[in-house]
Length: 494
Image (cartoon, rainbow, N blue to C red; front, side, top):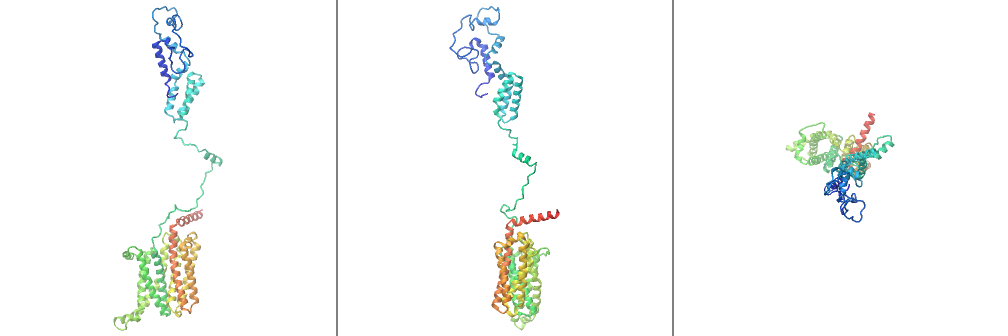
């Protein structure tokens, strides 16, 4: 039903009121229409009829003859009674259909469907009522059918609260027998481009601390060898170098703390399970011993009389004892830094815990041998050459184990800055050992060999340092080994 047209019920009531007030003779007059469409009760449109005369149908006397047979009255035509109105109401084109539209129950259904356009159930209910009316053959059913057909467009879409059916997923499940799809395990590429671990905040001074600590340990061992074999030049070079190296090592360590005044806080407790605490106490024990041994080398320049003369006589034996004490703590000083790095969560340091102490020990021996080759004459440099060979063997053995055993975690030691430094360190170590063996009688070749060994130790310490930092910054070196450990554990349990 169009919203611009008046309801059929109101049109019918207007027609009935006009029929009761004006009489049936005025309904067919010119310009009058009952409802909409053609003129009600007068036939097709044509020329306007003239006023009927008395005795003709529709004339003034015709009303008296329609009241009843034999009713003879005179005067003006009386108003039609209710029976006449009802009889005339039943006449006219499609009156039954108009009554059905005006009074049928389908009107309420259509109104309800219009107010709830999104409700598909109301429209389906109206269709069911229409089908029932058509089956009974009633006019009301026919009217319902017309209304329902006209209002089907009110809800063209399903209700919004009903989820659509994924027919393609249903066909896939049906075609595969209900098999559940499994997503293959994705290969790790990046953790959103961000590191999982916090990279060490250590700067170059820690790498320098690693080198100087190893140099102090190696030099004290060299000095002990010269002392025990009667080589004073070798002993003197070792003691002085050990004191200077341990002083520089303490400076780099304290400088890295940020607030050097807090260094003494590490001496308030002793924790055997803490590599840093143990290292602090090792450094504290080694430093004074190396200092006394180095000061004892100045005894020959003291006067022979007075207090200084007494010191000249006392210092040599005290220096020998201090030199041996420093040599006794030297292995711990040389290797504890490797344990300190392996105790962190940095992947390439942590997984190399068996090799790092070995590499650092070999590097310390090689650096101490380099000092002896540079400072001692060729006749007294025999222990330095042997130390160079032993140190190079330990360092190269540990480096080879790191590159072959760690798998993916050895990659930071083979690439980037760390890879370049470690390759240079191995080349310099090989060159230094070769020069030490070949140039036994050449002071120049021995000095060059010693310099190569010292440079190799620096490159090795800095290469290990940068390799660990690189592994902490890339999340690949954290996630992939962790997954491999989980797989091995699951395979062992299975």
